Image (cartoon, rainbow, N blue to C red; front, side, top):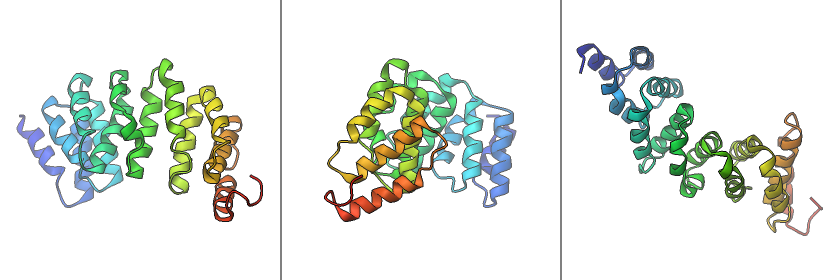
Length: 217
């Protein structure tokens, strides 16, 4: 490995965030295939969002034939950040060959951040013929998590477009009031991207508290 690249890669572990950020920028500016393993490994542990994003950018500068297999291997990691960052980077690379690796287990990952990233990546990577099935899979997660999780899922479904509409209509008949309200909020966004999401989330909380025999939703 080039000694200069080695020094830069070593700097990715520096205590100062600014040093790590500058090192990631430099590695991406002068991409070296020998850097891929260190970049991917650093993504799994890097605490700063902006440095992680720069690491992802550096990885997108390398040939897909080198980066994609290494990132796919990370999807099976026991560390949530490793899975999440690998999914994020795969979505930025946009290689459709990675689509089969975005499995239902990742779309239903118990870690909310991993699941949110998987939803976004799936929308980017899914081929046209798989988008309806993806919409059906995503609707199994309606009602999950806090506002940020629910909004992320709604945005993923909206990004799928018209194929999401039939499955959302089906979810409106769910026995779970939180699912019904979340489906309604998503349907509103599908037809009007400028519609407010929070009122529907509040409605979901209210209906969930009152129970299915409470005010109609």
